Image 1 (cartoon, rainbow over the protein chains, first blue to last red):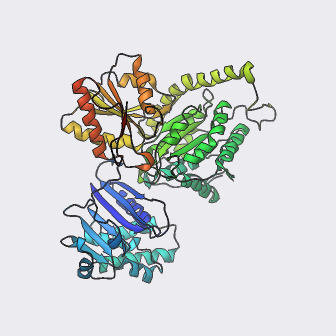
Image 2 (cartoon, one colour):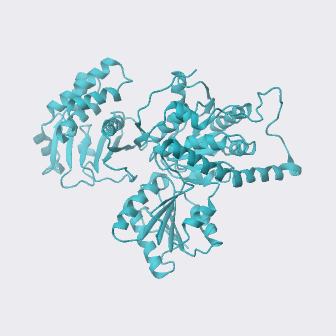
Image 3 (cartoon, each protein chain N blue to C red):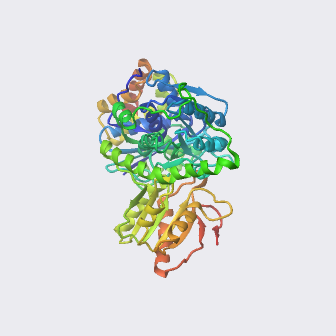
Length: 185
Length: 406
């Protein structure tokens, strides 16, 4: 069982990201689950979304999770959200920030000694998609860090997941995914 | 003619999407709706499919849930295939009309995405609304995941519209835990799904102008009782065999087997939890882990809540020694509903298991695997002692001092 927790603000697309990832993973024959804590669902409110991936049918519906990966797609949440909750010794963190990994750890000591990767998904999405929607670039970074799938396979499936969007938005998302894949440290 | 939609064999859908797709595939004629969280995407989905030409039907936006169900009643009496969806306070506002629908024997399908009832205001999942509907004369089916929410809609239409039944049916799923949780759903083709449910066969339809009928008349003491007796007779005698037949036919079509009462590891179980919704599956996973430690644990899930499968439950529980009943609804003033129903079920048979009650998960509070393990620890103590070692009713997952009664 692989478990992933997203930290996001409502409106940044963590739910879409989690469901998109589940969709891609499902095509490889694995079983998936994607869900979120919505709370009062105010735009901008801190929220969490979740993925489970397993080789067998996922029966567990508890919200409690000790994640293998923590994906933070809003740069401020590492200072205000309990993003290390129920971490394991080998939990991997991928965090959106304009800081270098060293600067980030210096600013947030909870990350000392952890497996930390950084990528600026906000900047990437602003420069490619034209809006601060950091969900798809985070998936590009996750593909690089986890080695889960080849980039061509992943992008091909994401095109299908995003198929209802205008072509130029899909194209921009593909560039964003590739940039995050290349730029994550 | 509506366009067909190409679906992959497995789609990653949440429970709402699964229900909306089922409503499209059976080509519902009329959806009258007043959308409410967390059920909103079901009627939104139907409206989108209609707007895009995937369904020939009418979507009627109304001013309240009372009006939504009233619109469904009118459309159903007129002679159409009719469905809608709601949750919690919307369900509460429908209650008067729910009784009208069942009393008029109209086969409307209502997707109830279970949600807590305020105050305090809460949009998350518990079973308070489902429990509120249990005397309303509707058939009530319960899904534990998005696949079930999809499949049980087909069962509901097939059974409800059968001329030997002609009763409305609810398909329940847990708010957010199923409705907003995406999982793999094995799909049916549009042709197979529609073929399973079949073309709608009207009965006493008001639009059949050659055979004028009236619906919803006044009867008072001269005929009201006989009318209600016939309604109860249909619900108690016709429905269970039709559901069993529909389950059998659906298994042939899809390979997926449903039962009135779902069981897991019950062949030699000494201790069992009985619950509904997503909790059934979480409990199944816990039971598998306990079995690996040699603990004879089992799970019983209620699939058909109304009509209550009394005989089937008495059969599956006949050899157990301790039962924990888990209610995701505050019983306010007594023990939980499942405690009472199971006590009533067991009282006239030979099973004399130790029975207790847990109230859990109100307003979407998480039921963790650790909670379920704790319940089985209680049940094991009850098996070993041969009597109740805990209070009769306990609250689990509650912050603050332990709360228990009786």
